[in-house]
Length: 502
Image (cartoon, rainbow, N blue to C red):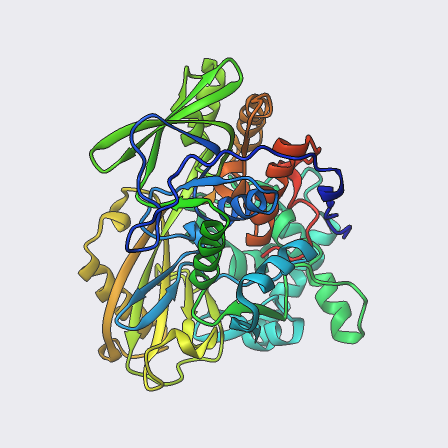
């Protein structure tokens, strides 16, 4: 992989006139007071997730004063940390690893020794057996048993002889790489749990991005000798904040405030006003009050369809239609406090078991011992993928906690009676869906967004691409450099050559 270059434009920076639209006094919580209606700001960043906070930090680094607007009451976006009864819960499990020196330096600068180096262990749980992930040939064959192993190898040889010549779907890509039998055993159930659509509709781009360079042939060669082929989906160790990712984002918020900026919570952007292709102001809602804020530069990490839908005047109808067809997959995490010391050694498990709805289980104690309130209990996050407002999404929290306990018992990890307490957290727009219309729709929306003179979309939601966390932060940093200095970066392609997707 060619590493992303980290250009340092500092030497070429001209003196900048900095606008400071807020009074220097602060309230008792340390936040600046909310301004009156119709204010102005230097630069506005929409969203306080990794991408938005990275953009704001980059603005501060170049002596600009960002105003970050976040509609939630907590920073971190999709990578936030929730707390309940002394336990910390990471929404999805977020490893801190990167090939970018710039991102790594930012992480180390913000947290220092609080950023732990952790070993990674994740496995597939299928038919009450643990399988290595990425799959290892001998481990897989032993787990499947001799008869099934023969069928898997025969299927692989068949599909090597008669592969799909035109590969458009996830099913075709994985079948060519592993054979139909292993696709149906290891990949189909889990993938359709996550995406809620058949593998025949999920694009091959997803597989090529997330599990490239991995195939049954590579597994067989590695069984005999080391091939030098680096499996791109596996990172064997990673950094992790001692109290979860929220530590990083809170440190970023403090740094932004220290640089004169503000991260304003519970503030929703409801309209984005444009004059031609120039954004001049936004309208926000804070509680019952709406007011407008003018600015010269804008960075947006809100979901791309939401940004397009809030433009005033709206973009051309074809762009609106294309944005409306860009879909997200949501998920909810049922966080359980379990009366058990050591349930399993993994950071997380992929649950391929077809008889349960849970898709992934986080074991937070194995990320950091400080994530749990005491050593005699465990904190688990059972992840259920769903769409906003479907039956699972609307299920009562008490019912979801009971469901998670039953499924924990059904797959043999712990009796439901060991569940002491629980809490449910829902995230509506978590995963951009790579369906059959994804590529064409995104191209049309991107073409319009690239024409906006003083706004750049960033992050997983803002670009509608399944970025890793460091990729999202790079898009935020590079967007600022584009706006301030006219640098040229393809934000939509930052993750396409990265070698550690999963």
